[in-house]
Length: 155
Image (cartoon, rainbow, N blue to C red):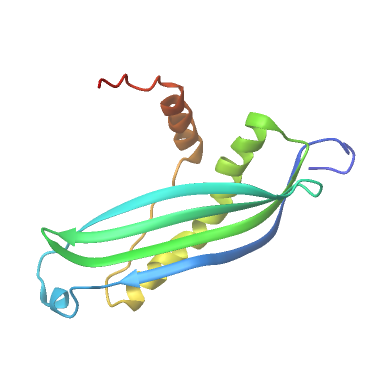
């Protein structure tokens, strides 16, 4: 954003950091003898909260979980919570939420991708390459799901 428009929305990265890392390989070393590769499932989560309203400071956490299984055998479970502090000005409401869940998540993904891959390879497994993600589509899916009325419950 330019300094010519002082009231224009702005987003700046203040800090990128690992909030939590975890790796488990409960079936090792036996899984290293397996000939068939496991199925790997990747889950993504985004959380955010405001730290300082006066300064527009927000923490965004992108959580990636990779679980490799075949049958009842768990090859590995890798979890990374990549976080960032972002200073955002000139946005409120849905525009602010979109910036946090789309723009900030987009900034954090390469760091989380690297952390997960590093955990998995240091655990003795082949590289785990996490594909790029369309955070805008994920945001729209989340909004659509929230707009659906809750199913009626019977007693």
